[in-house]
Image (tube, rainbow, N blue to C red):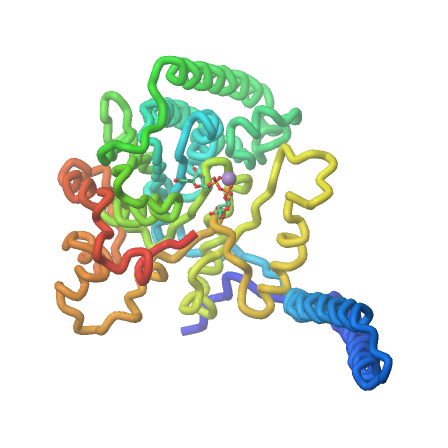
Length: 444
Ligand SMILES: O=c1ccn([C@@H]2O[C@H](COP(=O)(O)OP(=O)(O)O[C@H]3O[C@H](CO)[C@@H](O)[C@H](O)[C@H]3O)[C@@H](O)[C@H]2O)c(=O)[nH]1
Ligand SMILES: [Mn+2]
């Protein structure tokens, strides 16, 4: 059988590489000449009979600082040595039923510091990714255990019921509602022009729904108490009031997860929250890939999941690939951004160089991760017994089974049957005396 067509291609940016290497050669030669000059002058000073101590010390300090700067420059060569760019071919991906499932992990901690409407926009944009809904599972971790976040998430689900079909019907590109409605043009969406009158009516209607959604979230914020550092685990499957399963099948799974927090136990901030999501999701969906997002991010390209799969499913690189990192784009930054808080240098330049050597740097958000890469199972002996596995992964046998099972499930059907196990996996003492945080974990 013929090899399938590659899902992605990688090109070395040749002209850029030639310019970079010429520059490295010129700069490197100048540096070597400078170092030669410094060393020989230093020897002259040492050998001279009338040596002035202050002059000698200051010369030494200047030389030391030049050595440090030269070393830093030397390290930066790696970003210029072999820049590459990659193209993806999502049209070559297998058909929807054969695509692997994805769990989306979103972390939030405090509704007073992280505006709830924005957090919900992140959730909605993830639910609206262009990916089969039965293969998409969105988990919101709420470290504050706040009724505000839970109430708002229920409202987000209700709004998503209108928003998702609207995006699909008109091929909307910007699937974060706040970003979509704050744009002036009506041209987002491949089908918006062809059926313009219907589109304008539908857009007005969905805009009204969005205003209602925001209003309800603001009302929830007025009436309920906020974040706490001392609360039991609480996991809820978000669904319609009538729980009509057939109807809900068109929606991704949406789960609220608030892990147990006690002042006496370390919670390891975002990394701790992600590790809980890793365990809890293994009981409900166990998807082989995960998208990790901070609560102030949104998916600005709905095709990102399919693009990521072009790398994860490409047999030429997938065995060695742990994550696909997307760049972060920053908004609301001062127009006088003199320190480049947008990190443009990183995303538009350094990553291409890093990718040409070993792969781009991990930024802690906006990446599609392979679940198995986090469990560290390759380090384990093949014939490890249950006691050894519990030492690594903790006391839950169901969780250990899920690691080796590898098949994806849809927790909507059996949520109530795994609730007890899920509570154990989200408890604050679960990782005690295990290798979580060392061998099996997310560290961000
Ligand atoms: O106890 C905590 C603390 C934070 N978070 C969440 O973690 C994310 C990042 O926290 P934030 O305070 O916004 O940190 P930043 O400095 O903005 O984070 C940047 O830098 C971190 C590493 O330093 C990365 O992990 C982040 O992805 C990156 O956006 C947010 O969604 C928080 O809600 C939790 O879930 N629990
Ligand atoms: Mn942040």
